[in-house]
Length: 226
Ligand code: DX5
Ligand code: ZN
Image 1 (cartoon, helix red, strand yellow):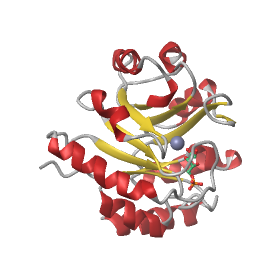
Image 2 (cartoon, rainbow, N blue to C red):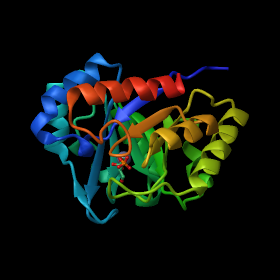
Image 3 (cartoon, rainbow, N blue to C red):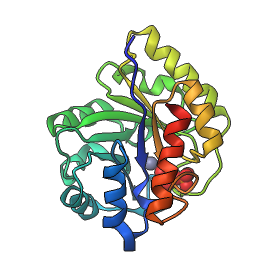
Image 4 (cartoon, helix red, strand yellow):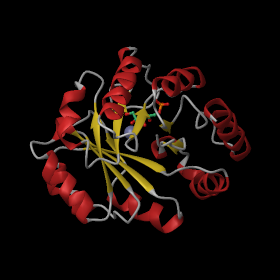
């Protein structure tokens, strides 16, 4: 049984741009797993967020791996647009492409770790055929597009069902990332259900932009999941 270390992935759309470098320094000093980048194209989700140049800046400003969350249409044709480096995670929505396998192949060729993302109402079977190649599954615990939304209750049971599906296939090295309204209370439930990678935004330690408060918040969250 592989015991997965728990990873905290701050949602960069929730980081105060005026304090980006200071906040990246706090992340590096406090054991953050990677930088979650919500790329939104205004088609797959009703919002525009964080483009390719922003990703390039993050690779220049921080040594932490990037955790690309591609909320874009035809991702198979756009993987080359992104500065994917060895060790970066790249989540692509099963709902956003007719060519999930081709997208996975292109992420792997770029040196990335492919993950399949599912919106709250998308069944787990949409991820089934790529689980053997996946570094993880990103389960949206809110409907994607905006920070500050409330948990979709049914996603807690979905986390448990996915963990069971992975363990039954001997895939306990495949991560379960949860994204949306990861508050202290929801973190306890998500962790108990089998998640091991948490996108933290305005519901968690990024509700503040103060460096000391963020550092204290990371320590609090770490204490909760061990
Ligand atoms: C939702 C975004 C999340 C969100 C997380 O579409 O992908 O990353 O910003 O932050 P909160 O805690 O505000 O849900
Ligand atoms: Zn996200």
